[in-house]
Length: 161
Image (cartoon, rainbow, N blue to C red; front, side, top):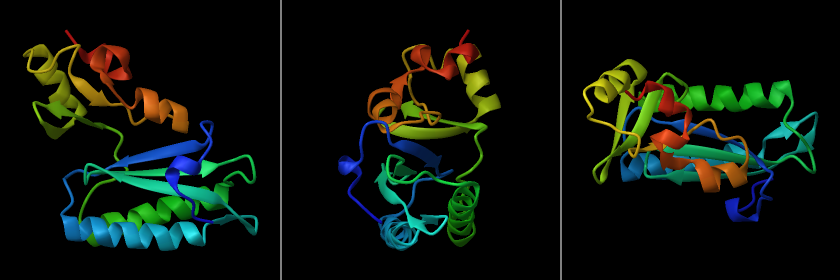
């Protein structure tokens, strides 16, 4: 069952998928339409899942799931990963590689490999105050409060010189 993201409780589970490039407006429309269809039929052991999504900055797909009514099972999580993989193929993007870092570079959002981010940190091209996207957040509350944070407040801190 698809609901508005803002209607999910703060303890709702979230998954953040970052695209390896910015999506065009037309791609965002298609991704939104396909995601709506997927979440409308997303189930766990035959039970509808109360789910929502956001598309942020034409780059991030964020799933939210209210686990108070029904939790995602292994099969439903597999289904969501298969859905994300289908988007990867259709749009020739990477959404599942956790070894990439996305951060603000001035007013723009940059996407770099973890090794490139480390090199940038050594060269002081990024700092402890560089705002990064902490895609390891687990709940809606964490996502709202700790997703866009200075690198010093995230797991990215270990790569700063």
